[in-house]
Length: 193
Image 1 (cartoon, rainbow, N blue to C red):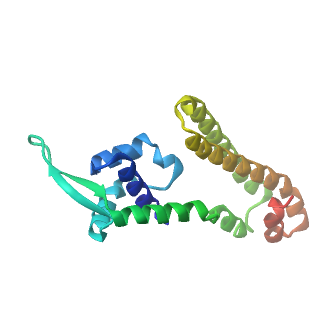
Image 2: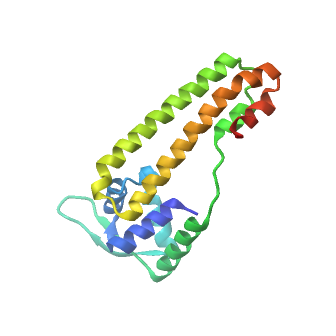
Image 3: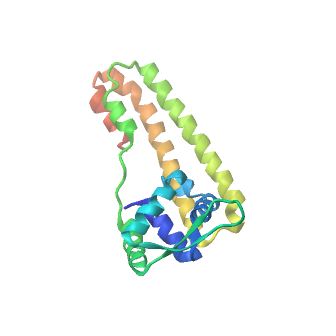
């Protein structure tokens, strides 16, 4: 599933024909960076590829004064079909992406308990700050959110709360892990209740 394609097709389906800067601006206004890994700089390349594939089309080119020409894009019928397909795929897919911290833990045998505790506590503090920021953002945005947007916020808040809980469990498990000398097995078990 390609998040950029989903965003571009969705923006054109909702907003009608737009030029690249309008789509990029929609990404900024929708704060897509909160919900996905879309890089706003990649939108222009995606627009060209998607036009070549026929899921969007160039409807006109506009130029005002000495400003550069702007290409206006619209979603096509095949684009609407693809939008439905990738939206439905994203809604059905339940894949949990691997977190590099798990791999790093498997390679932390040379760290002392104090070093590993400090790293986990620093990560915990950073996630707690991110959670606080999200809660503040949610509070400020609350009156302007639709029910669907509120669901997205709730999902992110719950994921961050789960991360905090795991870090707390991992820090509590460290003394037992280091006392047993079985660091590789013990750290893996830190998330088990």
